[in-house]
Image 1 (cartoon, rainbow, N blue to C red):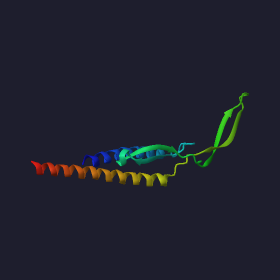
Image 2 (spheres, one colour):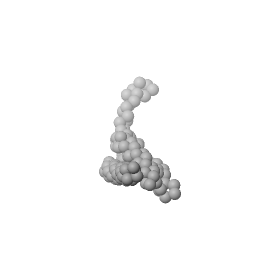
Image 3 (tube, rainbow, N blue to C red):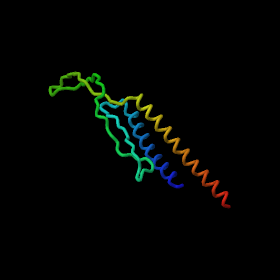
Image 4 (cartoon, helix red, strand yellow):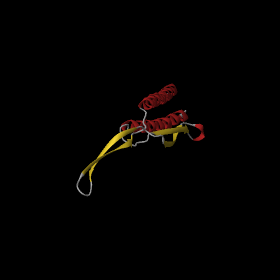
Length: 128
């Protein structure tokens, strides 16, 4: 019976890490050059539970936007220049879907723990 609780606890830990990675992506959506990350999950040891196997950085390029750089040259003359800067590659729609999926999976594992707890409580009440 405790296998269900330990499997659900390992899943809760993995989903917490996954949510933290997604939250970090959302927090850095406006950070130029930021590359989004994704938590990869796998089955735990002996086929029980879930764990994070790796956190992978998405190497795809973000968009580009103009960047104006203003500086003084060695002669003290102001020389404005323009260039392009890469923006982040975070897709907010994908991050939103990931957050919803992770929350639902987290909730399902909480229900598993509560059900196991209620079953053990009923079993103990019957023994007494």
